[in-house]
Image 1 (cartoon, helix red, strand yellow):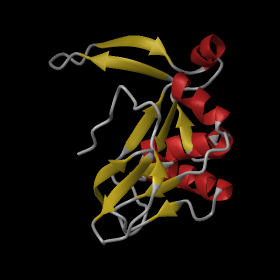
Image 2 (spheres, rainbow, N blue to C red):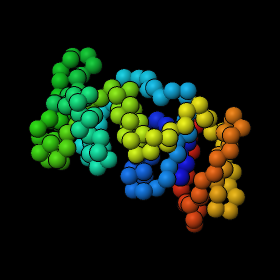
Image 3 (cartoon, rainbow, N blue to C red):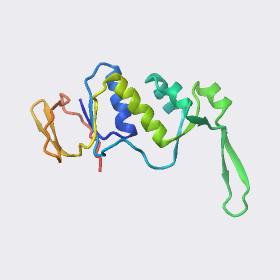
Length: 163
């Protein structure tokens, strides 16, 4: 299986597939894996998935548990507490609501992918498109390299367009 894009989504998909025995290669256009931006919030649904992939414990060491969420009125500053995200969330859903720095999340996922398959991530590999011939998918990499992957049979009914 081939995945174009080594961001949080691509690495999460690669890790889940590798752990289920699928041969996966990730093609990322950047020369090195690095994430920009601030933090991300991971709801209990997300942390449950990270737990299932075996990376939640490592990620919890790099993150903070959110205790609550509130909204402030733009003019008066009056606050409304929307929900408790601490112990109540863990009690209700079984998993925490975390905030984590994006680069820490990306590095945790990349390390887990590399533990499953050390050569799975191919950097400097921009996928400019793809061609399909029979049961093969041929990513069109802009550096001229040619790699092959199996296409889903029958063809998927939905496609994700990445820009």
